[in-house]
Length: 146
Image 1 (cartoon, rainbow, N blue to C red):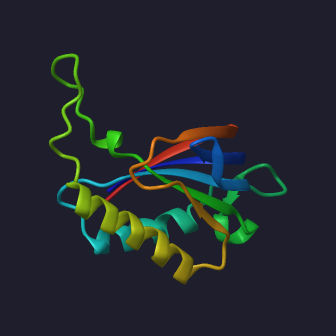
Image 2: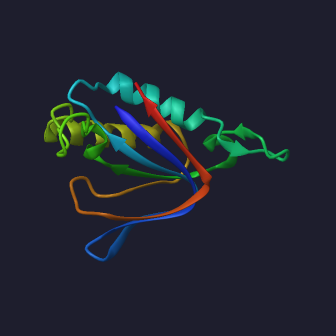
């Protein structure tokens, strides 16, 4: 499982010209699922993401987590995170999870994120064509993998 975590001042995701998820100050997270991923990896990454200290404190040092600042979270599925571009010019998606596994683990991630924190959690729509608006803060971007 791979997360691209971006600190944002706001973000939204639109499907068919309708905003389906919208946040203010927090994290916009692209989530990719590989064919070998498990719920244990999802749990690990939920904990890592929630406790990652990437928000600034009063001394402008990254010392605060999403939990510390009551961040809002926007989770968007993105299978292209497992596109291998090492050979040729067309990405190879052989490491990406099959549709059923990817959807199940994406839903597991979102539901368990809601269970373990009281933070606002918004999402895109799995497998939909989405347009994402991101207002990066910093910019601050991290890749989390397990």
